[in-house]
Length: 185
Image (cartoon, rainbow, N blue to C red):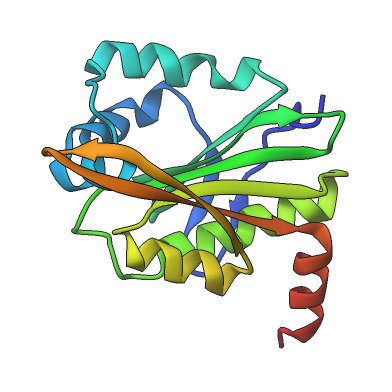
């Protein structure tokens, strides 16, 4: 399958590594952070041991790529390609950083860039999509900067603290990535 190889991707700020049980404590911190839960629309909770089992099995899957975002060896988040559709050469992207202590440092933007370069540079993928809640302006800015384009809106897709929020659908195509790659220094 497309994601049988689990690469380590090195940037100036972050290194993306295949997730494993050694990253489970970081995952638990990520999924229990109230702001991260709001930004991702995560209503449920994941116990630490369940997270450890989850991360221990990600390497076995060749239809998805789960990478830990690390800084100087410390887990600061994850970036995932999942929901692979081989017939249409497309997949979904998911990214989350551990919380406010790492927001705004460029880690997410560089992680996206590394992952997109890998995905479009080494696989036949044509399209990568994601969704982001309408109130998450910081994430939308980072996605647009990486080359994602808004495609549509799922109205009232999230109910959070009694309020309804839209989900914005975005994607990047191989041709978008190629055009962007040619204009970068």
